[in-house]
Image 1 (cartoon, rainbow, N blue to C red):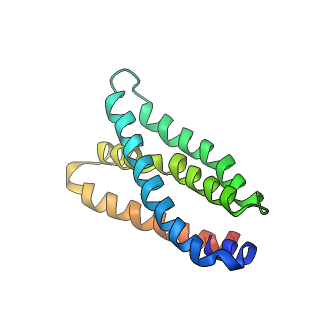
Image 2: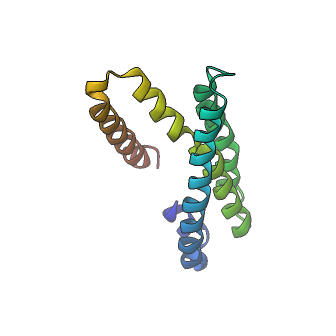
Image 3: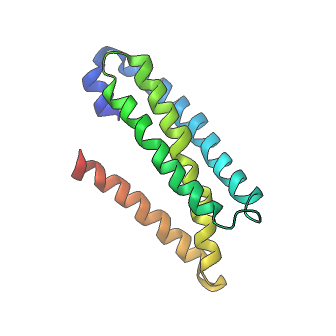
Length: 132
């Protein structure tokens, strides 16, 4: 995203860095906490809520990141799109890790979560180069 914003809005790059810190911390935190809250509080009523939260966040993140990248005439609209992308799309982390922990034997939980975080981080990093 810094390369994108730097190429589209070169004179607003410093402002982007400040706003991105807000977007990632507030939007990402709110999304992760909301995903965990929904998953924990509605699991008894809706047994598949964790997977639904993960899927819904992914689907809702698509149009908002499209808004961020396709509205190239308005820096504020791009930042709002980025904020909503983080607000919707990061809700998967808490339910996904909980599903992983519940599916693994107690002896392997630490390794499984570490491997999961490693591979998701690596795939996210490599995809930037492959798709960028």
